Every structure is written in C-alpha cells, then in structure tokens.
Image (tube, rainbow, N blue to C red; front, side, top):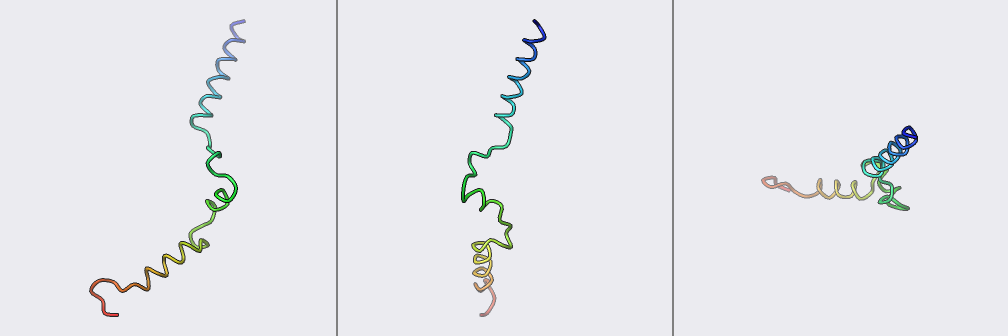
Length: 63
C-alpha cells in the first residue's frame, strides 16, 4: 500500500513540475507560432528596419 501512495505522490509531483517548468505552448498559437520560428534574415519587418537604419545619416556624417 505504501508503494501505491508513493507512486501517486511521485506522479503528482512530476505533473506539477511539468506544469510549472515545462514548455509553454499555450502562448504560441496559430500565426504567432509560425511567426516565432522565422529567423531574422527571413523576417521582412527586421529587414525593413535594417534598411531604414542604413539609410538614415549618422550624426557627424555628411549625406
């Protein structure tokens, strides 16, 4: 009987640890999940911001 209680307790602790520290997939759903996997060199928003930053004249430079 003590082994059954120990197994139930261990299983409960394992489930709670998984919920607390396991992968959180509830925040990445649908489009966000795909969006989070885009590397920066393929991200159109990132590339647009880089292009805009390169076009801006830096302080002290003539342009």
